[in-house]
View: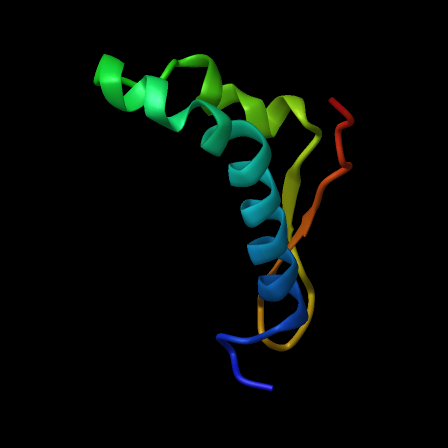
Length: 71
């Protein structure tokens, strides 16, 4: 396992992909036309109960936990 490809980083990529698919892609065309992204989007990860904490592992990777939000 490399420092770039850890279980935590894979999990973070999965969470990011799911967030973008759920919260960004459905609105992307409208935001492009408007020329801006709504401010509320920046608070969405916090409101979906995501948190990061330092991991005591040797790799010093960040542990990220999120609960999935049903829409």
